Image (cartoon, rainbow, N blue to C red; front, side, top):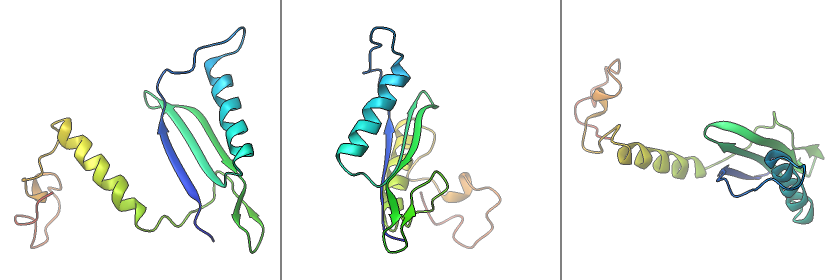
Length: 121
């Protein structure tokens, strides 16, 4: 399977409803037009306040075997997962839900490994 672009977008209320057209319908049209015109291969999900506004797959996941992208396609994300994890950890720090200087046992109380007291977030 080839590496595909994966975009996670948190939607802002930037799409105003047009004459008789819902925000979601305008967003879907925008995404489909963009994906088509840019030959996008991958999966796009847009959320607002934790609720999905759009979820769709486009293009080819594996060109060698002509496998299309679907909502069930599994992508090799390699090291990009580290960046997502780092962003989420720092968001939790900003929300004051975790502290970077706290040992992991504070958040993983059932973890009994020898680093529970020494390893920090």
